[in-house]
Amino acid sequence: MRSTTIIRILPLCAVLLFAGCGGNPTQPSDTGNGNATVQQQASKIIEPCQLVTQDEAAQLLGEAVKPAEKSEQQVVGMKLCMYNPASGEPIPFLQVSLTQDAFFPPGGVGAASIYKSLKDNFEGMRTDVDGVGDEAFIASGGIYIMADGYYIQIGAGNTSNPTIRQRLIDAGKMAVTKLKTLE
Image (cartoon, rainbow, N blue to C red; front, side, top):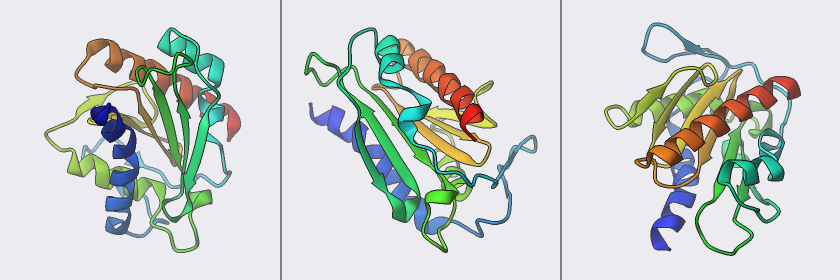
């Protein structure tokens, strides 16, 4: 139970920790791989529950889920949607957070800056993932995705488990596809 709580709060802690490490949010950030540039262009506020609905979360988890628990941290431009199993057990779960420039207070560091800081800090501990958003990686806490100026983080449990890793990739692809229709 304790490890589940840690996994669930890791994204928020990471965002808060690295929020002060950002640069100028109006400038594109080089990701360091020479192939992609993290873009800053998002302006519409989107709810993370729009990226993965309750029915889709149930499909991904293979069981019914309770209605989403929602929270937000405007100081870091983040909105969160948490799906827990209807059975009341702590696992499986699906957590979708969306950090977006349009939700930051004036002078906020920006979604791309937070994503880049996290990516840099997970150097040597992450697995880069192709085919999900502009760029993505899996590390402790889930899959981290940059897509069209939005930073999406999805958690679902132990990222060392191959089934969980595939669930994260599937959820990430679903979220990015939906994001493109909502922009």
